[in-house]
Length: 259
Image 1 (cartoon, rainbow, N blue to C red):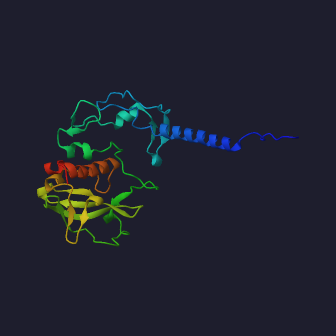
Image 2 (cartoon, helix red, strand yellow):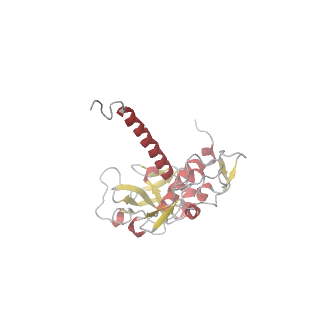
Image 3 (cartoon, rainbow, N blue to C red):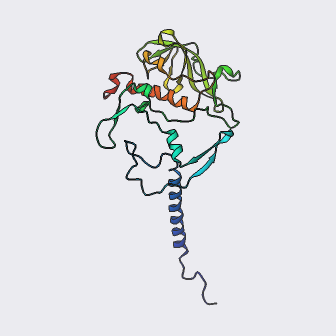
């Protein structure tokens, strides 16, 4: 034999072209898989968007949820309708798409703007063994505060310096060994009962816990949990959104530009 099969064939060129083809197919696959929720796109008015992008919707796929929580098929019009929020108290500030909306009611209670929340499952998040992840520390004797100030027993001061109640417990992410929420017992003048506040929005001092996101008058409206020992994913979203909304909507002064 005087020649080889690959004698005049550029293997390096073949390799690079195979890589680019593989990479293009990977991008196509990842993008279409990313379109299983929230698509097809809609305009601000809820009508189908005239520009849906270059990628088609993927074929429906059924996922089996862990711990016996059933199945979900996406993309699905029924799934999107079940998770859509249609009661938003908002109005347009301009006729064109893309302009901001402004709230028409109580933005903290209505869950709009920075206080918006997703319509997640009204079930607690579970760990790998099927147990609720976030639980009160008082129900677990094997957890303790190993560093920093234990906030239990400290008064809670709101953004307007009103003292609204006392920290009575901490809710922990048991698998992660992290504090997720402080539990507050509100004074009768501020609504009474117990409320949760995300630990990230509470500043623990030596003699008090400060929650600057909302004012004293707002604590009575903080969403409550259905059970005293569990918080669902939907309740978590609503609680976090309420405090986050207070960063902008707690007072008129916060709506103005800050230098």
